[in-house]
Image 1 (cartoon, one colour):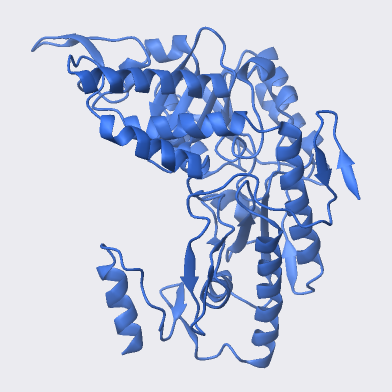
Image 2 (cartoon, rainbow, N blue to C red):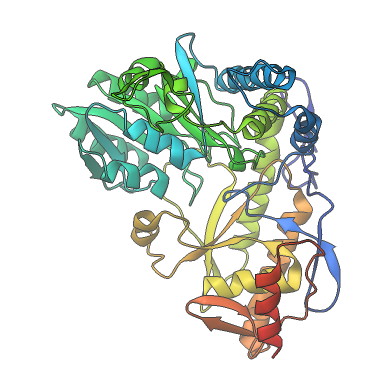
Length: 459
């Protein structure tokens, strides 16, 4: 059985095996297991950081020989690099359908982008307690203050709680996630924007988890600012972006004072450049910006219907499989939420999340995240005070990755029940590891500390 879509392609049914939608640079990476076998790494930790797309890695290799200083350089390579950098900025802004008068500031990551905007907001900020720390901690330090609203059990009641704070308030900004990094759920962006704008507040969307999974438009949604990271968008080369309305960013003090952010300097002071240069002091990350731009081009070329269906199939396969394991429970925010992106958080009864993650890695070659996912208030409210596990699916995953995780979890539950895990794993200061790790390390430089740890375990 297959599904026909309005845009043309014939898509596989939800129960069919599907392959990765785009090739990754790490597709053939193999890792050693405890039993001596080597297997292809099943990376289900993209919500923390994605591998590079193969096309992104190729683009970085292509432009590296032409790297030089950007802006103000007369040398040939400097001219080439400057052109590449500014074209990358344009491509990144186009990817989120920026308005004509919006600007794109190249940052280090989402955290950096939100801190930049926090330095520019001229009033109080409103947030929910569901936020990643990147969209919570900067507002706690804001001189104008922050109001944190506790999310309710439904989308409707959560929107009502936000509106209650906005009515008659002097909030300048509502900062909200585009998709939860814990559950993948989101509030309807159009209704959030309408509420905020009705009461005179602008909207920042933390797009770190949304943009790797869905198309997004500043113009169509009316969102005022969006922040995201290259390392979650298949471009892990140390750059991110803040894109949105110019006025606050032009009026704000330079975020990083230094070369490139000024028009004129005297010993008494400086005349600052307008944004975005105003906030990009120092030598910018040309390679990181080019990597994000390359990823944006690859994602923009995808059929959005095929993209969403690919992820929906994988997420449904994962959730249904987890539900079939009695010892496993999944977490959710809202009973009336729309379809989440490919992020699923779960627990295994009677087992520390760190132990489960270590076992899956050592015995099945699977990468998942364990802990509180830099979202402590939300994880605590969900009752996951000891932490949980998170699996995330994306463009580089196929059915085999999901099936291997489910098989690994079933094997773990069985081994836990029979005591087979005893003595093989140990916890030190809350961190799980192997009591003795015979797995060889990759033959690459820079692993001395890991080698010492492995040697100590064997001793």
